[in-house]
Image (cartoon, rainbow, N blue to C red):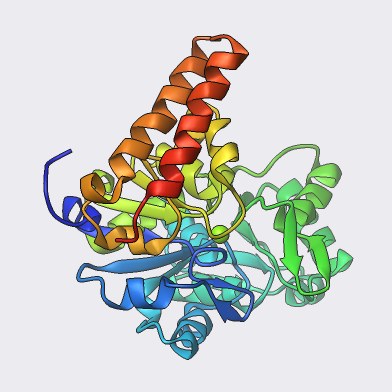
Length: 317
Ligand SMILES: [Mg+2]
């Protein structure tokens, strides 16, 4: 780590998760809009949500006050199309399972999206299946995906999130719908595009024309955002405004450990040495080392308490 300046001065770009970081449902996370709009380096908003096209996501962000063009949004549908572009000739027919975001990403990626109803009627041959979430996906659509996979099509899942939090409760997410196809075909997808698999982050680095090590990944979930960053060799910042808290971070296995932890996005603007972020990161690392060394429980607990105190002493950036 080089000394002085804002946390972001150590990087050339930020890749930022959305839910739990920028907004929670319809409302903005406190401090997020100000922290992001005053950032003076490129930001890509990377979401595992495959159903909405980037235009819709950018519109949602603009409504919250975040300046955002569609090309600053990367979805797991786009990452799926990006993965396919490395494996199939341009113009290939690809079965599009999911919301409108899946077919849009395929079309923009140079493929011919085939909708399940269309394939059912015309019995079209497809080179691949891109399976993402859509609220209107039916059992008949999933059957079509299963038939195509059994026929030899390459099978790419946009993401494997088992659940989808909604205003009315927890709904089955894309991972559950992929699981239904998996039960029929007897195997897992060939590739997964979204976090924690690396393609979504790699697509972002590709779009930024940067080495992943020059990019800081920001997220609220250890098992998607942070694990994906580790897999893509990006430094990462866990913000405690969403799913995971400090305790979860202290218990994280090596592949889910962030570079930094902070209460919220204001940390991007502060010098990590003067805000206390470096001291907190060192305290978190000490807990991880003690756990890995199978240190006595009271020793781990003492170090964990110290990390909690340091978290409470972090000053906004
Ligand atoms: Mg999130």
